[in-house]
Length: 72
Image (cartoon, rainbow, N blue to C red; front, side, top):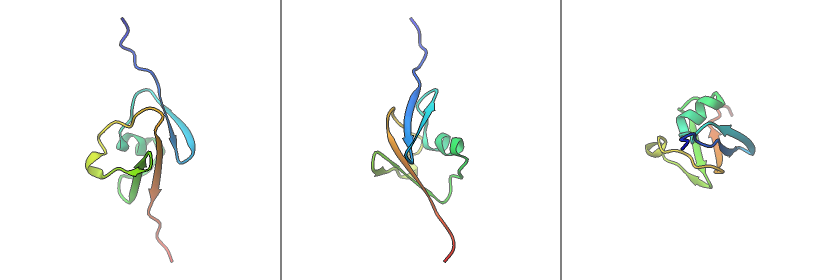
């Protein structure tokens, strides 16, 4: 019996991203080259508070990552 996990496909800001296993938010941000500060993350339309960032993001989730922009 194999314990190999299936790849996990997410849609991140409209683009498909595939991981070897379900990522958490910090792993996703690292993959995108984004810092953990100054960002907001929504999973399937619901903002995920930082207290829940360590929870895995399920397969086929729609993820929106918003970054803070300075300027005026």
